[in-house]
Image (cartoon, rainbow, N blue to C red; front, side, top):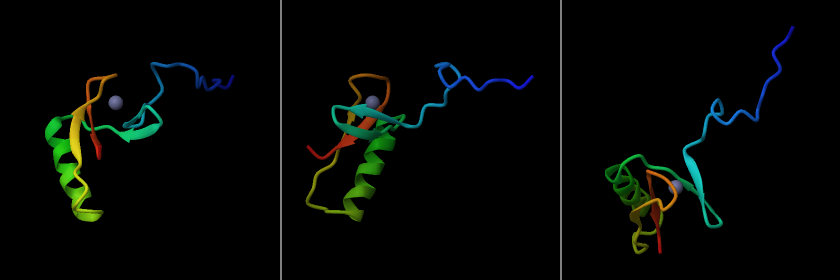
Length: 68
Ligand SMILES: [Zn+2]
């Protein structure tokens, strides 16, 4: 008998490294340093005048970067 794929099992589902913060689907960084580095890289890639800042996610134990 074929195992029915249970996509509703929360513990088995791999969570992508992103989370919803307000209306934004944000990339998750495990450490502040990682977010800081990503912010620097993003600044070079996009607009150096836009200040990107790492911050602790209010919902979980990880970090995001924000331009605000
Ligand atoms: Zn988050």
